[in-house]
Image (cartoon, rainbow, N blue to C red; front, side):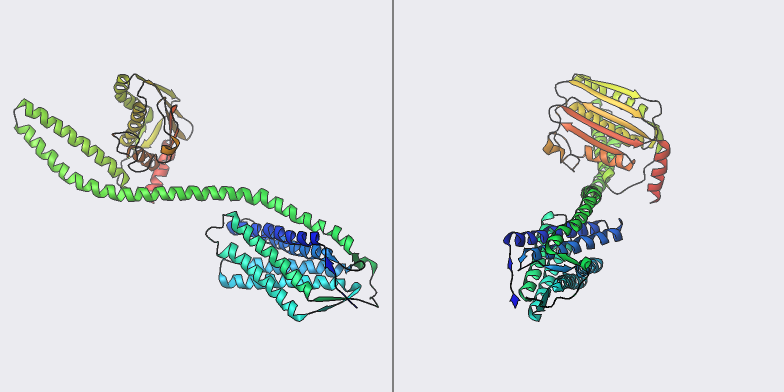
Length: 489
């Protein structure tokens, strides 16, 4: 006599939930492996196969617990374990051959669907201890196709369609739901075509091969603990790597955008500077000739002003040239404490006129570095002058120079108006300035110069409290070695 069991709705829903949760754990781990394919790849691949295989297996037997049949269901433990192995091997092969390639994705889906289907039917055959089971071939084919289709959809969504946007967790959740529903769909459609008959003459089995449904439901907890352990280990190891990896990607993207902007502005600057310098040379030359030939004192005064302004234009053009393609720069050994002293002396008069006191602190003795001294002076003038202009109501500017074994650090702190959060995002961009008469090139040029000296240029500011500029460049030996390597490259 055929027995058609009914399903406990709570266990039924729980089995689908189990399929989705375990699918997410496995697919999330497999996605992380693609991001970090150099880190213990084979070991993590085995973990993926175990997690996915056990998840499919648990979903199947939770679904069997949901099936309410007359009398106790008795399983052959050997076939129960064999069904788990089939599931792990099928998903393992699928994960092994899977790449972001459509053909390999299809093949991987076929293997995963076959693994799910074989696990299901081997697991059902474990009930032959006290039941005779007949299968409807049509439902067997349909259930297998459901498993293969769900596997393809989940893998395609996560690893093919979403190749460039897979950092978003939403795609992993959707693919896990699709996979979990596919596994459950395969199980329950297969069960629809399965017919159970109580065996009037049950086979003789050794007692230790047999396991009841209640005992099996308790045994399921052990593989679940293994999956949770793998999940916690992967979270502790790979998630930390993932966070670092994402930060590195964002930093690389930021540097790439900045490099593209510098390149574009550099090309523009090079062309403009070249076109300006040609007529400037003629203007300065003829102005000198007129100056030498004229005897009128008033005209000479005007001509002197003209030559000074031409020199100022030439200086601004030189700033443009810093942004253009690398050109020959003469690096010499210079003492930064002497450079700083000359710059502070130059700007002290301007500071005093605005009731600003520049306080200098030099910590250490060795400030020798290999640099282009005029460019370093240009950076210091830009930064300290900005601090003076940002302190309209008077105050103090602190300049601290210090050194350690390998680097020289210079910190300039002012008590000025500071920079807002919105403006801080734009600082260093070409032609962006918060000053009414600024060119928007000073900070950009300064960063470029320090970068060319293998150093770091960092600005921190709080509105209405002040700004801190930190400059770090290598000392003589390290600088000379790095600059030589850069010139060779």
